[in-house]
Structure formats: C-alpha cells, structure tokens
Length: 527
Image 1 (cartoon, one colour):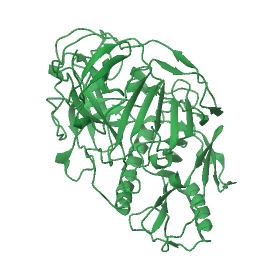
Image 2: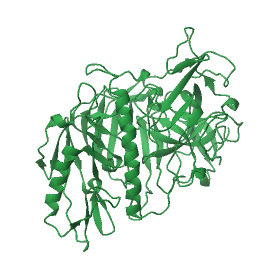
Image 3: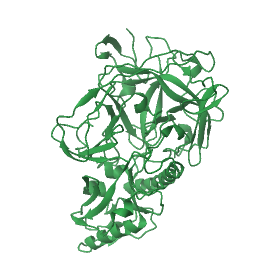
Image 4: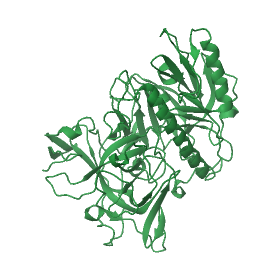
C-alpha cells in the first residue's frame, strides 16, 4: 500500500490480521527513537494487596467504542471514527530529556553538574506538585471518589526530569509519503489533557518544528457544545468546547478537538488511533523548558497520561499501564538504555518475577499509596504510620511521580532517616561535604575510594514492602557519594517517591481496580 515513518523516512507496509506490517527501508531518523506500539483492548484480572508470581494473570477482553460528533465546517474537518479493536497492547518509547537521544540533551555534564541541575528541577517540580495538591485536595471527601471532569486547570511537568515521546498526529499529506506530522511531546502522568501548539496560535512558545496545521488535517474534528451550551469536558465558548491548563508560571488555552494519532510499532510498521480528544493550543504564555538556548526547543505539547477521563490511556480504555525506569546515568554519565511506557495487555510482568501489590487511593488525581512506616537496615524507624496518613481535607499521603528526580520526605520524618544514616557512616572513614555546594542534603567525601557497604531502607506500603537498594538510595560522585533523598516543608503530601528511587522496578498501575503492582527488574533487560 503506502509508506510511513515518524520522521519521514518511509518503509512499505501491507495490511494483515495483525495490523500494518513493515516492508523495509526505515532510515536514520528512527534510530534510537523508534516505537513499539500495538493496540490493547484488555485489562488485568483482579488482584489485591499481597505477593504473586508473574504467571497466571487473567486477561478479560472488552471492546472499544468511538466518539460521535456533529458536523460543522469550522476549525477543522469533521469525520466520525471508531477506535480500532482486536490488538493486545500499546507501548510507547520514552526518551529521557537528558539522554543522548533527546533533542534537549544538555551535553556531557559532570555528575556534580547534573546534581545541581536536577536539584533545581526537583524544586520546580515540588512547586508544581504542591499546586496540584492544593487545587485538587478539596475535590473529594474521604468517602467520595474524585471527579476528574472538573479538574481542567492542572499544573504538569515543565522543568522536571521529564520524558519525551515522538508522536505522529493528523492526516495532512497524501500517501505514499507519511500522511502525518511528527512532534516531540512531554509524557506526563500528572496531567490528563493531551495538547499541541496549533497553527495560528498567538502568543506561542518557540518550537523548531512547524506548528501543527490542523486546518489541513482531514482527520481533525471539532468538539462542540451541546444544545444547552454545555460540554462534556471543558468550557463552552462560541459553540466550541475549550480547555485551559495552568502551570506554576505558564498557561495554555485552546479548543478541544478530535484527531488521529500515529505511532511506530515494534515491527517497524505504524499503528494509528482515530478520533482521540486533544487540545489545539491557540494561546501559550510563559513557557520555559529549561533550555540554555530556547531557539533549540523541539517540544510541541504534552501527552497526558493521568487518571482523568480525557487522558490518553483512558480514551483507549486501557486501565493498566506499566513502566520500568532505567537509571538516568551510567558509567559514562548519560542514559543510553531505552525506557518504555506499556499499556493494556503489554503492561505485564515477566515469568518468575515476585510481584507485590498495594492499593491506590481512589480519591486523588495522582497515584498515591498508603505508607505505614520506614525501616533502616531491617529495623523499623520511630515514625508512626499517622505521619504519612491522608487527612480528611486531602493532605498527606505518599505519591509516586516520574517527573521528580529525587524522593522527598517531610522534614520531621526526614531528620529521623538522616540521623540513622549519619550514625551508620560513623563507622567508616568518610567526611561530610558541607552544605551550600548545590549538591544533595547529605553527602560524604570518600577520599580513598574505599568500598563501603551502603545501608538498605524499606518503605512499608499497605500489604507490600518496597525495598530500596543502594543504587536507588545513593548517588556516586567522583570522590564521594550522596543520599538521593531530600527534606521538604510542605504539608500537602508526606512523601514523594521520585524517579531515581523507582529505577530497576517494574510498576503496573491498574486504574480500574485502584491497585499498584511492582517487582524488581534488571535494567539491562528489555524494558
């Protein structure tokens, strides 16, 4: 039939029962950024707190339906579609912003330079997460599930250690050339709105790629208000449903619409999903992606993977998603191993893995678990479970966040952890690095580079123990090491588990059952 590739280097494909199959000819721009995409219409069978093995998960299939709309020739063409069914899963390659593959790669920084950079990103991310918590914590009572329909003004990751994805959108060209435009999106699990800067926006942030030409796309359709002037999502303005997403210091506004999204598949072909809701960004202000030269920006929008109904996985009716984050550095200082976000039936464990499960809090728009205590070297620290508990007004709790580099703990409990660490290292010939050098809160000089057995720590979740190994708890410097945990003084959450502590673990989130499952996984294996 035709040809297609995300960056415009085509390879022929043909239709088959399994979808679009690669014919050959994929070229250089896809090296290192190709995708692994299949469509999923299934979900995990039930599981609750406890320990399981990777075998025997029961899959229950269900079908998907499209979203119909009214035909009005205005912002873009209107075509009705149904989402394809019959596939097994969906997997998106994630590109760490600081990896060699990233268009935002900052260069070969030293470990100390990276820590200073990550500390600033962590501070910015905490401000964003605090704003999220403040804006959403009153949305539900203790006995009421949160209604994400009302959460439109939600801050998401901007300067955090975010991940990127290369995504095709629209139908703006004629085969045999690729029919879509390709853009880099920030992948964010804290946001439920997918949006992209559209042609004609004013004001806009600078991006190297041309703005999305939605008027030329034959698969773009409007999201219109109903006869009562109301919208299922967003606010009705001039008969169209509009969105607003606020950040700490930035904002995007535009029109909701529906569009075709295209991804590379694991066999070199492409997989497309029609009529997905997205935001056509027409007003963007005060965006800063932390680039030395903003004129090198290649980010065009956000891919929302949060818990709200407009999020990408929820539109595809994929209740499960999974990831295994790779360390963002290795001996050479930069990440080279790929990370993948897997959804639907692709979100599964390997045979033989020991899997632990714990409940997710259904009242929150983020992914919170119940933390009952912390152990250091196998001994429970003197911290009551109430220190981490959620309060009736939505404060406290323990959340997992891939946009934050470090784990942060409220200062009172952090000081107990820090005291245990300092006592442990008194037995070794190491010296504290003074604060104020831009590094982490607890760092040591190890001048003789002696082999020190790092201590272990465990977070006791409800029904499951999360054991934290040395590689997730510490960072090695040229002549020392740091504890990769920081204190915070916010009361909106107790503990935030950042992406460094999540590395080398497979996490599977089930939003239907409000469950989180996790298991150890070697980063050298396929993710």
